[in-house]
Image 1 (cartoon, rainbow, N blue to C red):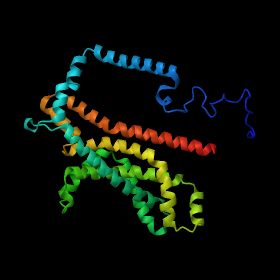
Image 2 (image 1 turned 45 degrees about the vertical axis):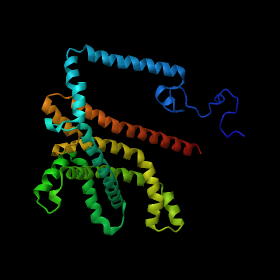
Image 3 (image 1 turned 90 degrees about the vertical axis):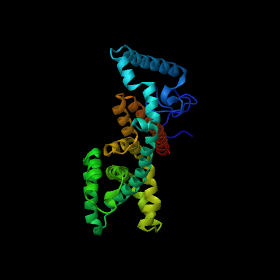
Length: 312
């Protein structure tokens, strides 16, 4: 039995067999995994391949025909210097960019864990309506406004240079990497807390009412009903923030920490060649591109889930 308002099967307005629910030609909707990049079909593959060859060929031709192409190639893409900067040679006065990237990874992992916890705490405080938490809400709001407004590089300078100058026991005797991670956590927690708040606000009030009707205390309703739905809604934007976080670990090098970017800088100053920066860029791309593609998959899966829910 056809739904009311829908065209009868076999009519001129009905979609052809096997294409029910398919998007119209030229739309931005995606119907298959293979069609995501190539546009779908054999003709789409041919056109996409041809256009890719033309674009890449044009860019390569512009680079090769430029008057300073040879100088740029030697300065940024010298195979010898790229390999030497990757393996490093402390006896020559420079560090391995390949080994230094592990510090970026460790800083990223530690900062990510701390950011998730601190940002969630800030978001819950700002969402609370309890009168006793009013002064803490004011402080949390001020915290978010401060660290969202101050550039990250200034936060790194303030923490990395200011905290040691205080001469506090234990606190002022940490490594530059610790101060850098602290600055990353303080800055990114302000942004991520707003992502959490958006996720909490996206949970429909009917879900809260349903939890209360089941007799769940407010804390359990938050833990078992609201937070799981909120986190599911904000996973893609959270991953986008962490892609930026992975790149921003390079800023910790301004404190003197030998991470990948700093190691590349030291190499370029020793040999007057910038190929080490190319190596560092490639290593960061190897780290960030898989995370970016994973984020795209989550966004696409979330889009399909929402469309399926709307159709139901």
